[in-house]
Amino acid sequence: MNKMKIGNKGYLYPLPTVLVGTTVNDKTNYLNVSFCSIVNRTPAMMSISLNKSHYTCDGIRQNNSFSINIPSVEMLEVTDYCGIVSGNTVDKSKLFNNFYGELKNAPMIEECPVNVECELIQELDLGGSNVIFIGKVIEVYTEEKYFTNDTLDLKKINPILLSIYEFNYYNVGKKIGKAWSVGAK
Image (spheres, rainbow, N blue to C red):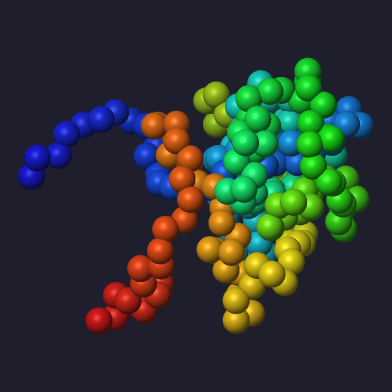
């Protein structure tokens, strides 16, 4: 075996690229985030990990809510822009058509194929550069055009994926096998 050590970085590929929405000081704001994950199936819970200095952290704390919006590849430029500029200095509320769901205080993006509305249930500070917000999923919103056979279709959603250490975006490739099935052979 010729394995080499490459450091203690969190190599997990690919990472989803999402737009986290919140209201900060009565202003709608969105942030490009790639540290996003499902943490529980029932009840559904998701986490986002943000640098402690992000303006968005204040909005999550102010409202005890946030949204996770899954942009499509067609939204690449505006999604990346939301990670380049701070909502503290740039008003990102006019970049999208916004809507609100059950919580009434977690802004979501109409243009995104999938929107996840979350109620903050826990904040974790593990002592590093980031803080982790865990949200209970209140509702998920989408459109019929993103379904195939009554299931959300990954190819139709066409999400943006990130390779964090090479700083490049990718899109979804082809299906290669049925989960919890292909291994039975």
